[in-house]
Length: 306
Image (tube, rainbow, N blue to C red; front, side):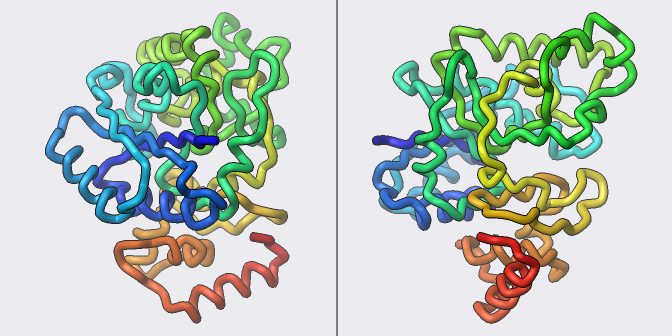
């Protein structure tokens, strides 16, 4: 059984990407069964060569291929966001996976670069997608879904009716299992781009590449256990304040938000959860084993289970 994983690869987040890869390989029972599909920018072929070389030298036995993404495909559709990093065209490459990857790839796990996997990724791969559902991800129905769109959206019935009759719940696109066959059949990339075009004219949301996914798939996601995306560890998108883990078991830790663990560790201003990322950092060790053990002890003391 070959597990296909897709990730964005760029120099700015390379340290996070290598930590994520390391975590997948460390915790899976059969690392030889994992194949990585990396998406890199087409605009800088030199960077692409460097990235391939770094990945190959860091993980000599890794099975992977680098695909180039033409950022011009989305650059004209991207609007300004509350956080500049959300405007990176590579953030939108996940919408193109069904076009970028070969047709023989029928299913893929998409992972952001600011995650670490602390469980066997094969468990996630084995969760079935049922019925007509195209993606599976943890859903968060307690979250105020309305806040992801502004009054311009909610006051226009031809927009807001997209959610009519649906139980719409927030989901985070940083960890998704995607059925690429159904994606191609449903032409979902075009549907996402359609909302981006509307947003360009009417300004109906603020948060980069996430809202178009919510508009297309909200209320039609195969919900899986929350353990597969403990997101928000980077804090909010404005201040990046520290956040704690939610109670319960965890399989994927996700530093979505403004604060990234490597940056906070480098600045010697880490949040407690950043010590859980540090053991997977292959570039610059920042903490001693004692510090990591202390962070783990504090987390366990608060009844958080890893």
